[in-house]
Image (cartoon, rainbow, N blue to C red; front, side, top):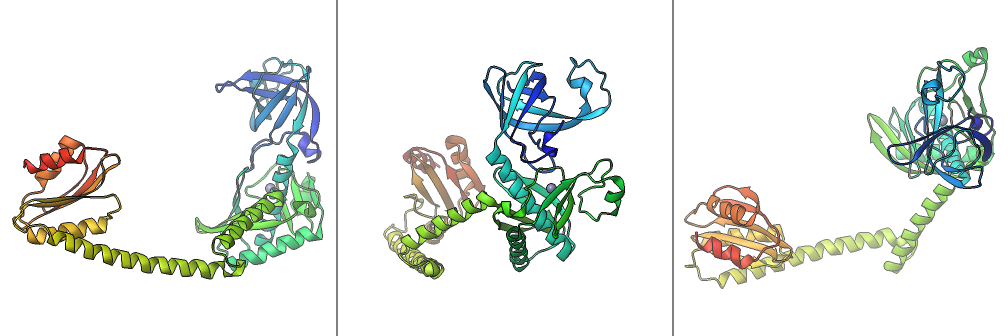
Length: 409
Ligand SMILES: [Zn+2]
């Protein structure tokens, strides 16, 4: 029996252990005769908490699931014949309980209340999206780390800011949230949101003036309890959009973490909050200019260095430090191959960390397939190329051994 339907505010309850079975992961699946633990369903992660046994020992509830099945299958020790399909709620508990004993369940209320805040916030948001844009909420995910909704239509950042403000107005108005199972006739007359066709008892959650939606989850009683709703992300997703939101304490924590980043940036740039963006842009442009200057200087340096090498030297293979980038390496081998006959190559790196390499065949167009073969077979090199150009990498190695081997070719 699901006590969470009686009230979302039942934090503790008494129950009897109907069954307790060891799981493959060493934990235990516990079925109670009644529970206030909301199981994972409809995109929302489950409640967590503890079950206190008759001796006062606490057993951690780490997950709760619900599955339609024959109760007789899971509880052989029940006298009654229960062959019809019934929703079975299993509590994953880290230590075993005794079948038949009286226990006391305690829900992690901070965790549950946060889920209630996020979920009611989502309903108001989706209700406004439905009434103003006629988009459906086609996906919902509420976990300990994120809350996302998927809508089957596009929303711009301006739309999102407008909806966010309207949701927060609904929060400030502190309107009632009513969860009920209407009779069939009332249900037929209601215009409510639902992800699928429903039959039998349908639970309807109404946020007065904002939304009517079929939903099985616990909700806050008044919208003011949500505290605040903040949209934290918007992206195009499957032809529509995915929106990230945070409500209540989670929203406050998010805003605090963003503020800490801004404060730290203010300190780093020794500037005020509203000058941070221009300071970052200035720094980034200065950095790009410096990189350009550095690269031009490096190229000049390379040209001087290469001029020192006698042009009658056939194979020229240089070893540079790990700061030499791919562009510089290609530049070196191109220049070398214009004035030398043999293999022209460069290794960049260290013996400890390994090397990147680029080779170009010189004026005599010596076949570099020979070199890559030696590098692969003798030194486990990764990479490839063709007769005129090869490139790749070597893991930690004595580079002098490599140079010796190539000289033998
Ligand atoms: Zn819902």
